[in-house]
Image 1: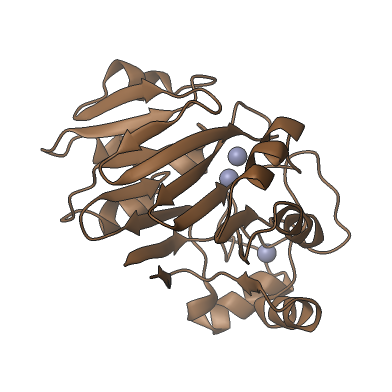
Image 2: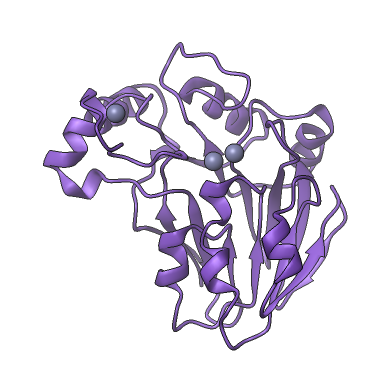
Length: 250
Ligand SMILES: [Zn+2]
Ligand SMILES: [Zn+2]
Ligand SMILES: [Zn+2]
C-alpha cells in the first residue's frame, strides 16, 4: 500500500490570506475545511516515509514519525520553512534538493539533515523508492520528482509554468499513475511562474497521467465550490486537492 497525504495544498500565502475579503478567502473563513496551508505532502509505504518539501505545518505533522528523506522541490520559503524547526530532530534525515538558491542558514547549520544536491534525471534511491528529479520552469531552480515503487509511479510537479521539453519527454516515456500538478491560478489568468488550472490539466494530459490532482491552489483561483464544478464538468480523472486529503495506491 502506498499512501499519500496532502498536508498543505495552498500557494505561498495560504488560504485565507489575512486581511483579504476575496470570495476564496471569505468562503474558507466560513467553511474551515477549505483552509489551505502552504504546500507539502507525505508519501509512505509503511516502511519508507518521505516528504515532498517541508512546510511549517508539515514539520509538526511528522514530529513523531520517522522520516527517511525530505525531497525539496525548490528553496522558496513556503516549501522549506519547516526545515528551520525539523533539522533539530534526533534522527539523521537525508535532504535532497536542487543547489540553486539553497538556503544559507540550512546549509551552514543542517542539524540532523544530510544535504545532497540533485541533478535532473540522475536517479536516487531512498529505502524502497526509486526517485528521479526532473527540471521545472519557475523563478529559481526547481525540481519535480518521479517516484517509483513497484508498479506504482507518482509525478510531483509543484511550482512550474508548463514543462521544459526534456521533462515532458522523460515523463511521456515513463508511466505516471498519478500526477500532482501546480494549479495556482484560475481559468484565464496567465503568469510566468505558475500554471492556471487549464494549463495544469494540459500538462497532466500531455504526459498521459492516469489521474491528475491539482495542488498549490491560491486565492487567485476560483472559490472551492466553483472550482470543483469547473473541474467535474470538464474532466473525469482530475481531482481538486484539499488539506488533509489522503490518496492510496495499491
Ligand atoms: Zn510555492
Ligand atoms: Zn483572498
Ligand atoms: Zn515557488
